[in-house]
Image 1: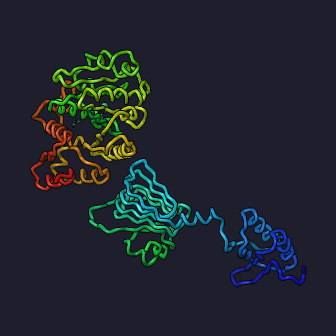
Image 2: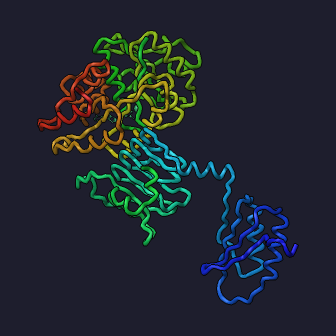
Image 3: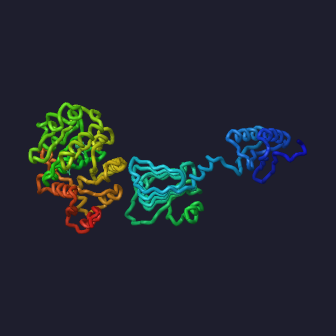
Length: 226
Length: 265
Ligand SMILES: Nc1ncnc2c1ncn2[C@@H]1O[C@H](COP(=O)(O)OP(=O)(O)OP(=O)(O)O)[C@@H](O)[C@H]1O
Ligand SMILES: [Mg+2]
């Protein structure tokens, strides 16, 4: 065994460790060697926990396997798993990813009491009325009036944006960031008929509204649409 | 084969019963055979507005349960031979009848009458479901108040999901004088922007409506009141004529604008 190529290699980086796992051997022998490596490779270490990136190559790790590896690494050393990286996805994960990047367009008026929820980005040709709700895991684009509630980036995506031809929402949510309309809005009279866009301002973690043009500067994801 | 139109609103007290009585009356005035159906079981008052309360022997629930024939429950109007009322039961509740029974009754009436006008109770529960069960078309009544518009929107959403109904039309009731005087059409404009359905008419808030109601005589019979003219125009629009909205004020611009709202060429 000893003169064979190691199944587990550990490299140091300035921002932590990279743990590369052989993707051809059996999972059991991998775990065996991982435990061994972490025992042998003892170093006295003072200071904070060190992040570890696990590279699994072309091996598909199940949730249970990932948990096991995470536990081993955490128990043996002053280490913690920061991220898993691999070249393979399950079919389900793949389909989910695909859904997240899809743009669904709908032509309708979402009326009071109605909820329109989709995976990915939503292009709504129509209005969202007061008391109505549109929800997307991605961004929301309303070609019409947004008067109800819009919730973009439902699963916590802060890069999601909300755009509307007429931006008069009762509430906006992006990820878990919530903002509501001002109580004394002196609206409509300004005659400003430009399309507007809401996004999470990363410096203050609050929702900001700007002209739609500002998006090109700050959001690379929007390029997907073009 | 006649046409059944349900008059609904979501919110209570906005003028469904008043609208039903007056639309029935103006269609009868035009010589159509009309049956008014009160589905507000337990809180009936279409019979009172029509001044026919003292003639009720059988009601809607009696017909549904087979205690009488449909014809026995129909009450002939005092003024028009071609106008009848099917009253609601006063002592029962909304669950006393099912949407299937309701549809059967409306279908039977459609064979005899040109128009069946169905007065819907407030709310979106059983009573609403009964009222829309047999309808072909819907008229949504709202007042220019935000809560009333919100409920109208909710109802329109429900009506649009019902594939048996063609897209609903709107009546804005109880427009107050000062709104017109200021030339302030914004309110109506804003309502139309949100609800985005066809406008069938607007009716002024008119003292005469209340006194007429108390006398059991629909306002539409009194040709000199503003509300009466509004109802007559609504009746003509239901019959397919394109009638411009009456000029409620002398201010120019208003008229133009409402024409636009009405989708007139
Ligand atoms: N255009 C009007 N001008 C003045 N008063 C009106 C007008 N329309 C309706 N009203 C009054 O408003 C009150 C409520 O009207 P109505 O009973 O028709 O409402 P409704 O929607 O049928 O109510 P409910 O939900 O209880 O059935 C009545 O007193 C009626 O006379
Ligand atoms: Mg009523």
